[in-house]
Length: 466
Image 1 (cartoon, one colour):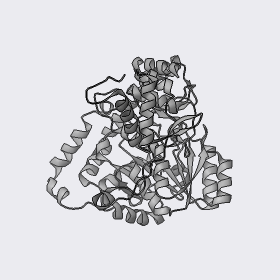
Image 2: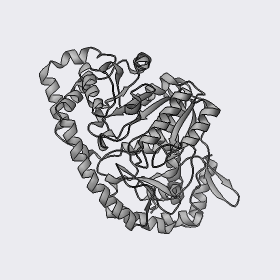
Image 3: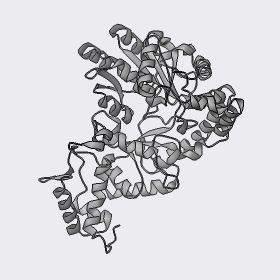
Image 4: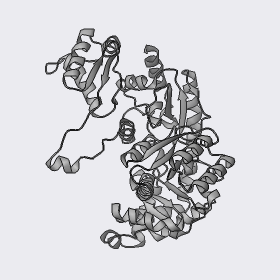
């Protein structure tokens, strides 16, 4: 509810409220604002106040009025920049899906738990493992050499050796020489894309899929070919048609605990994907970000392919130390030098101290035991969250698994997400997980942040108001 103050009228406050959301890209271009009556009820003001606020937004060029339809957010085009602004501003404005979810990842402690975020809350990852690892590395050798010189371009040799051993446990055959460390899994995906793609190249990406990946590939100038993802894997008939019509260079897949559905790839589907890759000459990037939450025996393309046409990507931000930004890729020998060159051009090297600390966590079994504790806690959280979601009238489109649930709310989740923002909750509407925003009633929930009855009570009240 808005409150009149000496410095701002209700009209000014309401206009500023929407202007801030548009500036933060929480309201995408083309989004319909609430009707005058709905907005008046939500904010406890008169319809006249809403009309005046919308008129201000019109005058500022932030929205447009469409006859008989209402007010819609306008495409915000960046004007010419000069001086320092031109040097620091990005050439491509981040899409609303990527921006909103990324801001949610940096959600401050002490606020409401956010159902739409894609990470574990900090208290879930808290343990003595991180501090013990840094102490061990610091005590084993002087910090000065690690701090005063660049590390190995491909990454710390000890970590790459530990990763090779870890991958062998997943049946992914990778020698240390085939592994390149990165600043997280997202950086690894970016290295692969920048190495193998040029502007205008076609890329097959699973849909629904990770909103950030769509945004990142679009920023590189790639043409995205969405491939429907089912319980057993991607739609192979669609992939085959794309291969014939567009000769794609790349297929990006989350084989295990797919985001947002939780699906895992079947062996038969994996075999047919690799057959297509060999027939049509495209590479497969396997994003195994959630490997720590999945069983080792889950079907992985890189294991079946033996890293011939596949590039395996993973990291540790989701399970242990997000702030360390330690990730890696494992690639066919013929690609390693090209991938390493791309890394050198962007970041030179990666932090040796943190990579050695991670190597110690792996070698000592600390990471494995920590992950087992997190998975056990997640299993309990998922059970409670699923129970609450179903009690609130939601239907799970896919069998709940991993960190996320893919649920049908029965209402337009783009509108729902706007209303829930007023209550302090960031949702992840289903439209964000499609290459082209597709309105619908689906949303992704994080099982760790949807265990409180308080959230579901607000959810039911807001949905009923729609």
